[in-house]
Image 1: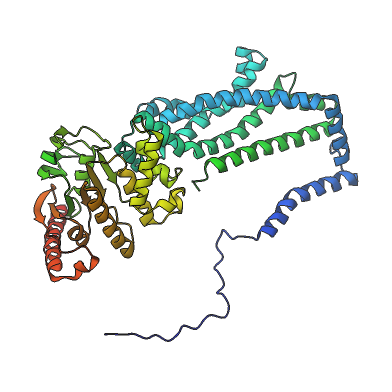
Image 2: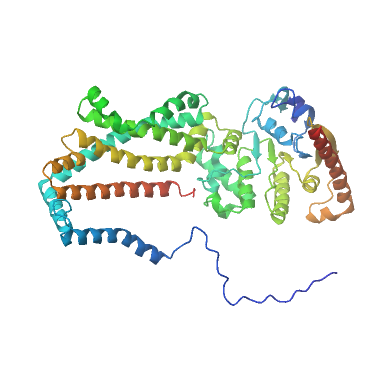
Length: 275
Length: 256
């Protein structure tokens, strides 16, 4: 019998300093302080600069003026109407883009012939800036709702298709093999394996492209519209109402943030299993 | 009533067969382990039985019917457990039962029984990500057994586990085999494992893959202590020599 006795290991008095890598954590408290500062500091600077009188009111209105412009627009009902008009366009345009791009991307990621058939043309089309299509869309579809919705679809559909296809293609081969040995046919594998596996990634793509759609709707309304947040901005510009422009920009920012947070919450719930 | 290979050849690229002219008969209820050097096509052999790969020549017959594609009469587990990460343990096991022909109740009873058999009843509601490697492999095997397959195909199922877990799993799979009486065909690169579990050990030769030796192993006992007996060590050494010789031949062939 061989026995080896080692002397008891001395406990280190203090924990060894950890090597600091690029990704270092901060405490929750610090993180929250930084988050608040991230918004509060620019806001304070804005307030200080506008209050100091260095920049004329006409160019940089002070927060109270902007708040007054905001309450005026709410009281007249303009803001609500414009907001609804913009959101309606996003709903229609982005919704249509989803209905086209998700099935198409799914097809490209799953069926052999779909990838070589669609990838080249979509790869070209997606680099054409959607806003460059505005004149053409107005010629083709007029200045009504259709051209704005079409712009949203054009701006989102190609990217979302390719991103969906990428996500779908990442389903591990083994998982498909296993499913086949468990008796699942192609349709069942698509519905019960490929789709649930891809869903978190599809939602990630949607979140990125929702921001694109949201930007585009304002662009579309800047050019030819009689309602919407973008329209309200161009109108305010004509009368040099920078306070209104500021108010609308802040509303646009906050609504955008709300959309993003909502999609993030949905994504976190759906993708609890994936990291 | 058996699994039969009739002159099976398989080549991924024409002219360089991975398997050549395999004739083999595996009677029902047998535990067969397959070892062989890399390039001997042992995984391909399983893949052919599973129906995931097509033979270029010959055919595989299971219970009088030629294998044409994958089906639930042949369950398979891979080295990576490949579970559905969004499904709970119970719903992973239930996957193959989610078709017409299984009532909700029948499905639940079957899943409960399988989880009991693999010792994971208390983990039924967990997601696979929270299980250990050995537990995940148990789920994967339970899932493969859901439709009572005639053959259970195991492709290096314990290859990624630590030694202790691996030995637990060896006892576990032997127990499952004894309880269910299913035919088990298991590929492994671990000769000790092959000799311990297999009642029959097939040693494959490489370039092209074919059966070099078909050994019958008399059961020496059920416990892990068997692995230390001279009889066991003798068989193990014999198989190891065969595998080593094939491995060297494969290297020489690769260099030539």
